[in-house]
Length: 331
Image (tube, rainbow, N blue to C red; front, side):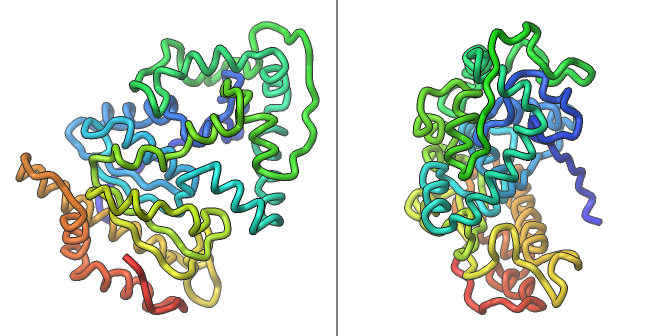
């Protein structure tokens, strides 16, 4: 309806076909290698078109890592980050301490989605140290280093999902009972990190928010059981003039459901907010094209959002009008 072209990247190891996992590792929470390929492909396919991004949950962490890593050279002009957890160290600890049932459920979902589908690849990688090669291959695109790309293809559509050499030994990993246990057994080893803390620190966008040079709108619900309000880096977001944080008292994790039959009717309040935020970011980007020396700050972002829907707070309230939600919205 709005004339936008949409691209949705599928994260490594999450596709139904296991051949997409052509190297012995699944996606990293904040890794940039696959994101670099996806963004470059979209931008190169549509030259002259500004590109904007929407990140949901862990995907928003990857998106912000990409934008921060590139600074002013980011090929994403603006972004909407929804339910970002910001810091994996604090986030997984908060889930463990305050929502242990969710912790078990999440670890079981991740285990079923990734480990059960790619058991042989992961076991061989962890047992034989294949992850060391994979980590060295992607280190040039690490969030803390200079962006780069691997010389080998990211995907092998019809290739083998298994290592080219037969494993010299196999390990059988036990079923994890928490996200931290899964990451300690699998994720950090697949990506070549010596410790879980080192792995989490490298993946978390909270350490790079100061490098954001393009406008980004962050939406978080204060009752989110997964992306805890304790993780929201209020000071870091306030210090960066290119960011705008919007917090709602309720909404859960990617919830903000509408009507009597949640999620059966579209759009949700979240959908409406994201669309209006994107419209505002596009308006702000067009202003920057007309005024190339201008640098977007928080007032510009809020102003463009307000210009798109009369008033920024009004847009939040009008989008919420059919939803049973508390009245106040902190922005």
